[in-house]
Image 1 (cartoon, rainbow, N blue to C red):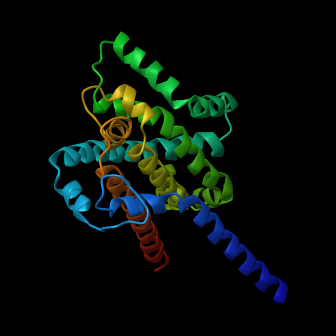
Image 2: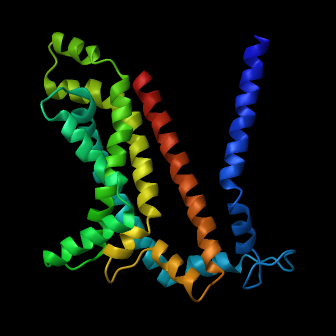
Image 3: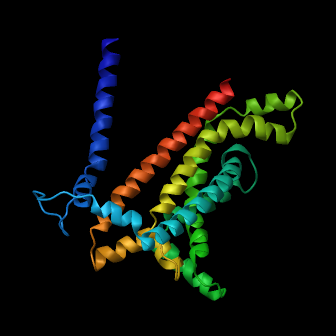
Length: 265
């Protein structure tokens, strides 16, 4: 018992150290967002929240955020749908070309995003398609959908296929088995895949840079401001983006817990 308790404490401390290591670089960004000076210096002489007000009131940033959010939401929904059915073919059923399918599905993940984006841009140009936020959705899906499929496939490998067989033996149709057995069992993986898809799409810069055309997203604006014309709004948007990402994750966890409670009752 004492050894088990010590192990739990050690793992908890280890987890805290990992989280601190990952989020420590965000601390200077947070200080920069509340410093009244244009550039961050320590110690901070004057604190202000005016940059947050300017960021929330800016029509340009609102338009950029709307474009990024539109792309991220569409990519999330399509990725969850593609990942669900792709994971079933990836992990649940045996068929002749299954191994080739698995390799081809994961292949885009191993390409550098800038190379993949350039290839897609050349493809769009050859087809006469004008790049816009819609082509960015396609570009994001090419890279993000395989990741979402892999996340759901991990869940699909974990549950026992005999549960589906038992439902069929009891007279359930294929659609009933899919709706009442397969979907609830894969739902945690689908939600996780959706979170991955949203966050990867929201903060994606290389794919957006090459494929949005005249439209722009928040990562592109942040890059432009970091390269030339730095503004204190840059760290402010960073803090708001992190806060928004945490909010999305907490909301998804709350929804998942609520759905679980509904199923158990």
